[in-house]
Length: 251
Image (cartoon, rainbow, N blue to C red; front, side, top):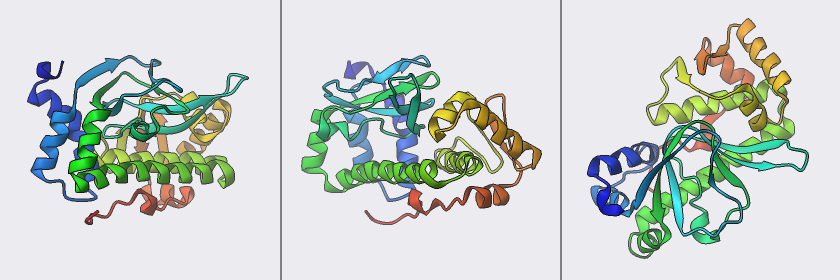
């Protein structure tokens, strides 16, 4: 299956990851080639499909390079809590390399394309390439930082601040991988998805988005976020991107 992948396939699969990590540290050409050759397969799934199922024994890790994906848990009453929204360049289950199973589901929110990297390849990297190992470790630590910020949002921030903060964060993360500009970005999600990610009801999300629109701060319509006033949006969100560790330094 590996032989069927072209260099173009591999480069496309790695583009987001290299932009994301390359913004924080230098990644050498040998390290890039190691990552290219570690990819065993590229797959695509439609929206709504589970990519990684909770409790399943894992032998490979999944790298998203197109679409939007979420980690989530469902309650007995059918309510869903989205734990994180993933974009191009994000590993969906890199922590599964050591855990061998995860305690939550990972599903496509839109159609999604992703690459598979066998755990055997990750083990060889960890044994032979310490800098590349640290960079991948950084990726899991970044996920943890995003989780902590989400806990703060759901536990202490007001409804409108939660929504504003999430949309600020997504703008910064998407811009880093070339999927957002200064004033707008595609976000082909439903208000119910935003509700699941912020611990709110869809009705409440709708009210908060209407408030942001009426105050000429931001508009979310037709799968696109248009930011009218970035400074006001950041202030309302109490958004400080320090937790995203955007500085470039040796790791």
